[in-house]
Amino acid sequence: MLLAPFQTADKVQRIMCKTGTPTLDSLLDGGFETGLVYLFYGSTRLHNDLLRAAVHAQLPLTNGGFSSPSVMIDSSNMVDLVNLRAISFQLGLEPENVMDMIYLSRAFNSTQTYDLVINHLDEFFERIPAKLLILPGLVDLFVNEGLDAERTRQMTHIAARINAFTLRHNLVTLISTRIKAKPAKYPPVGTTLASSAQVHIHVDETPMRTVYSLTKHPSIPNRTESQVRRGSAFGVTLPLDYFFRDDSPIADSTIDYVSDLNNSERY
Image (tube, one colour):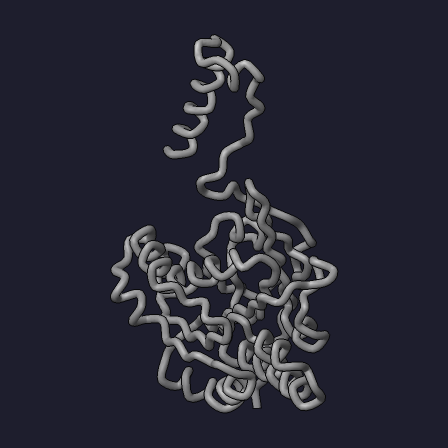
């Protein structure tokens, strides 16, 4: 029997797919890497990033996609058809075609989540040539229903199953949770799932920015990237004259400045 020659880590070819969010691409040195499990936690803004990733994966390889459908087991009811339509148009895709390429299964309790992950993943991927698996709210139903001994055992089984399945099929797997973390930067998903996910990304929002923090990665150091949120504008301190008389030249110049800021944000 001939054995494959040993390769050092620097010789292994990495297969990447862009995330669809430039800030995330910068954070991850280019995008999602196959064979890894990504855990998103923090602000619910992250669900927009997961939807964008599902659409972006359908782009051709030359455009940074996988030219592939996506499989989603949604325990968080995060699918927003209006948002999907908007993302499709932004990427130059037909919304109907995009939605046909996202294979969605809803889970309404922890028992259904466990059954879908443990017993049906093989069936899904035998029928669907997907390269992206998305599991939004994977742990949320377990936590909300109460993590007794049986649900804790099921979560351990799910974590091991997802890790092995991702490696065997060379997928990108995205997991998210809405549960608030204490402290904020630690993923609230239990030790087993946190350990099995090779990449942790904390998403936070301020009035001005969306902040992405890479808190765990096998080859990239911890770091933070941020992007200005759409529709945000820098605060302006107005002089008292602005509030008392309309003919003040200071007030007029301030109004013009605020108008210029709004116009610049619009374009």
